[in-house]
Length: 494
Length: 98
Image 1 (tube, rainbow over the protein chains, first blue to last red):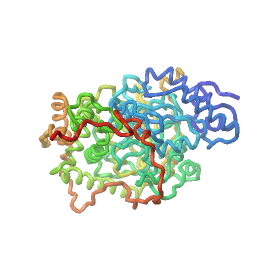
Image 2 (cartoon, rainbow over the protein chains, first blue to last red):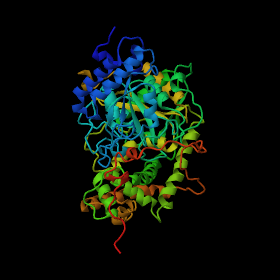
Image 3 (cartoon, chains in turn purple, red):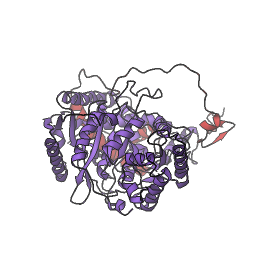
C-alpha cells in the first residue's frame, strides 16, 4: 500500500517512520514528495538557501538499501530533516546567511547533525535565517527574504524563519533551528507550527555557529508535540565536546509523553498581559486558559517582577557575547577577504565591513561598547546580576506551578519591512521569549488558532529545568483537545 | 525622558575592527544612542550583593581523557582559506620595512 503525495506531506514524521517500517513506502518516495513540494512552492516562500535533489535522493537510496537489508540505523532511518544554515554538516554550506561566510563548506559534522546521520535521517537542504541568527524576521539574511506561508506580505519571524516556514509549507516534516532569544518559538508562532527551545545544556552546541554562547540552544520544529519530542530525543545528550552540555542522564521526552499523568497548575504571569499586546492575542490566550481549565488544570496568576528588564538585559549580554564570538570572522583564515585592503590591519576592517550586514555590525559594535573599559561594570556586569534576578523570579514561581503559560508573541506576524528601520521595536518582538533564554529554561510554542486575517497565533509553555517531558505532556493535552488543523494556502496547493 | 549616552562611533568601529561608511556611522550613532538610552532602565535596579550569572547552570566542567587524537590534515583545515600556499595561509605583509 503506497501513499500519494498529499498523504505524505500531511503525515507526521512518526507516521512516515511507521510507513517506512511497514514497507508501505520508501525513503525515495518520501523525499521525492517533499522535493516536488519545495521545488514548486519555495519560489514564493524562500525557506531554503540550498536544496539539492541529487544529494537528497542519493541519501534516500542508501537508506532504502539499509532497510531492504534489515540493517536500518534507527526507526527514523530514511526520514528527511532540514537544518538551519548555522548547524554544521561536513561538506555542506554553513553560511549563517552571511556574505562573510558565503560558500563556506563545513570541514566537519557537529554533534547534533552527527546524531541525525547516525539515526539514518536524510539531510534535506539548508534553511534561511537572519544573518548569524540576529533578528526576528529573517529579513537580515544577506541572500534572500523568507515569506510567511500564511500571507507572503508578512514576515515568518526569525531568526529560524526558514525552519518554521518550511514546516508550515509542508516542504519538510520537521526541521531544526536555533534559539538564543526566541528564534525557534517566535517563528513557530508566526507560522503556526510547534517549536521547542530545550533547557540550556540539554543539546550540544558543538557544531552550532556561536552567537551568544550562554543563551544558544538548537531545537526542533514540527507539526505535532510527539514529533518534536522525538526529534529532541535524537539530538539530546551529553557531549564531551561541549563543556556546558549537561552530564547527567535524562528521561527521553518522547517516553515521558506516554506515561500516565495528572493535570497540574499553570501559572499566568500578570506582567505578560500589559500594554502592547494585540487584543486578538489576548482573546486567544483566554481561550487557551479556559481549554486548560476544562482539562482539569488550575490556572493561577503569578508574578515575574523583573520581566520589564529582560529585553535590555538580553541585548547587553547577547551583544557582548556576539562581539567576542564574531571576532573569529577576520578575513584571514576561512572567510571572505577584501580585495581593497592597504595592509594587514586594514584587511580586518575591510573584510568585516564588506562581509557583515547592518544588524550584525550594529550588534558587534554595541557589544564592544558594553564590554569596553569604563562601561563593563555599568552594563555587562550589571546585566549579569539582573539575569540572576530574572532567573530567581522563575525559580520562585515554580514552587507553586508546574509550568508557565504565556503568549509567544505580543502580536501576530508583522509585515515585511515594517520594523527594519527601528531596531528597538524589532527587539521588543521577542519580549515574551527572551527571559526563558536568560533563565536557561525549556519552552515550547504551540499553535492555537488564527486571527481574523488568517495569521497564526501561538502560546508558550515554559517548563522547569530539564523537565521537557512534563512540559510536553501539558502541551499535548491541549493539542489532543484542540488540534490545529488549518493550512496555509501554499501548502493546500501541493 | 531617558538619558541618551554619547557614542564615539569611530572608537567603537576601531574596537570592533569594522570599516563603516559615513552613512552607517550616522545611522548607527543615532540608533546606538537610542538603544543605550533604553538600557538605562537597568541603572535603577538595586543589584547590591547579587551574584553575576555567566551561565544558566553551573556545571563543573568535565575534562576529557587526555588521549592523543589524529589532527586534521592541513588541506582540510585550509579548505575555506581565501589564500593559501604550501599548506599555509597567505596574509599581507605584517613586518614594516626597516
